[in-house]
Image 1 (cartoon, rainbow, N blue to C red):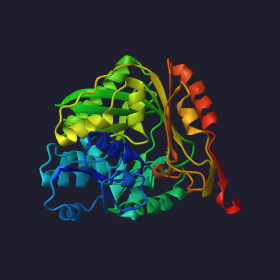
Image 2 (cartoon, helix red, strand yellow; image 1 turned 45 degrees about the horizontal axis):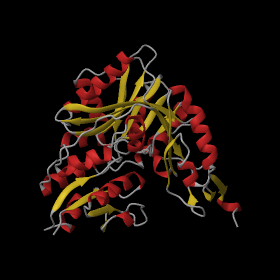
Image 3 (spheres, rainbow, N blue to C red; image 1 turned 90 degrees about the vertical axis):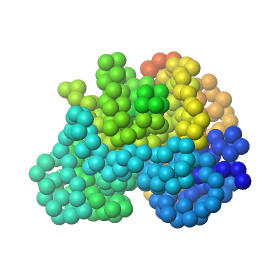
Length: 404
């Protein structure tokens, strides 16, 4: 029997993994709790179970030949990725320590401190009353997060002490372990540092400017790459990321770090996802440098030597597509996607909803409608390219309660 590629998750971000497996003629097993995910029609088999249930997944695949285990853009499955790749003896075993620091924000803070990366005030506990008491001593503003969730679920900015306890309860409701972390809110410029290691060395590094949408949830509206940074600052960010990867035992594969550079130049690393970034990052990397991160990840997973060599250098903007409404709505119409893709400045557009679908307000990353990537020859040329493409895409959402 042909060995299968086990893909943890079948959401929008994992679609590229199934497409890559199909390109190779490699059979896939999709694992997801939901049967309506867009990756499932691309898979050869479907296991309807949680990606965190590594024992159940192993039992369901007992006696099967497994070529590799893979995922992207989700932290919740990282422990399973480690355990399943170890269980099946795949060519690459996802590192356990990388899963720990990705799934526990306090563990990442401790790791950063251990290697000399600047830290800031934080406290974590499942005792919300005690956590509230400690957090009030920080002053404000604050950020309240579930310690082991991703995609901005349960994350809130707190500007007033009167908001704190409700934010703590909200975060606890999104934490599988009931652990909540409170951090002082840093001011500065937001970036992500995306890296891909090979044999302990940096095979790819791409720093992006992160566009945080207004509001209390820290939702990402898009990324611009490469970031407009002093070369020395960019090199220092990449060096810090490299040090952190090696400290967490990640010598091969992808990781992405959320970073703030303060007004005084201090580089603060907020957290890590030791996996490929979400929001269509592979499309952005391809637009900027012509590299195929998805192919490299699958190569690594199944034990094939991989390369990540830039073939061009362009500026690109990835825009997250989302409903503009604060309430559920119906996707009324979308422009001609083929015509949008044919625009010279458009590198990629993916829309996962269709006219007539009910779409949710953009309160967490999983509620995006898709993404759009545009390119330009200069950093300053991106806003006009994006505006033209968004106008052509012409996504319209009507309030669900008024749709007949």
